[in-house]
Length: 443
Image 1: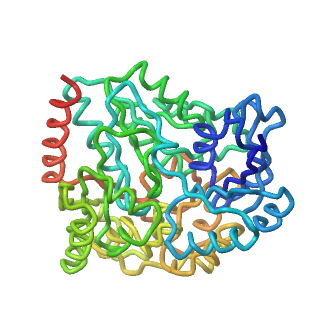
Image 2 (image 1 turned 120 degrees about the vertical axis):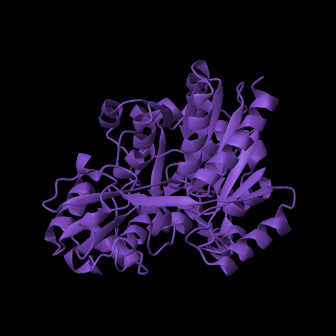
């Protein structure tokens, strides 16, 4: 039998997972390469033999996505699997046109062939877009279950950004030493630090079959803490999907976020305390039209600074969560909300002070003007972020990223940290939902 030749288009996450669970030991296919986008420096690496398995003793090369047409023709490829997230439908179909015009099939893999079944109950927290507020909901669920005496393991969507992927097969984070051990980027720290601060543990890595086996050893229940707007790698017993009324309509126009909206048991329309009523109604009607059985919660997201009085009257530089304001498409985040509320004299434009890859980030994401995305995919980029801040003429930095940036940045500017969480009423509604879940799955 002739093997089908396959390219997997990805961004160091869903692509590796799809390979591991469907293609790795599948003798009907030969994955000739991966292509990569979104993540700086990911191409030029190899998916190592330790992960690729016995059918791929030399590993699998990773090329820039820009070379996809050439690669299809070079390897006489049959199927190209699209395997990354948080993109509009027009983008997906443009990629389909490129692939089809080069002679290959364009493939989107679904839950049946990619989800792993756990022997423990799984609560999934996913979203329709990056930056909707998944993490604060996941942490609230973690807190509720932990306070009821259950052992909880959160498993985070992959972020294997270290050049040596073989060191990231299974990662467990329960202390700040673990963050250093795995050379975590700012984006990774944004997801892991809050769990560590809560006294919790969170798993991540590359091989989510192995990760699940480790998590199951020390947990009564698993939380799938999703990334971007990707769908869960694990089969969920309850799926909570987060929607954002600041971006109405995206719940039915972005891939694969609509899948999460359609599959959800519960949809939380988050940030209703800072969104226009008309936009909230648009999201609500859209959800009801595609998933009439879902329970809809109007969620409050509270944002606050550690010391708001320091912001008043100051010229401030606002740092925001990187994915939210870059490929998430938001022009602002929690830092901007707090800076305005606290009476900042001016929120400055950081672009004139940018250096290196930070300049490139602003060129790529032209909607960004008065925020500095917390880019930090490696030591070099973290240094460039640091230099950008120090070059600026701000009086104060307002940091809307979920981490304590002073742990990774050395700046000459004073920093006020912004935090955000689910509101009290939303927490109560989540508690009721989790209690019902406990009755059904954790007797």
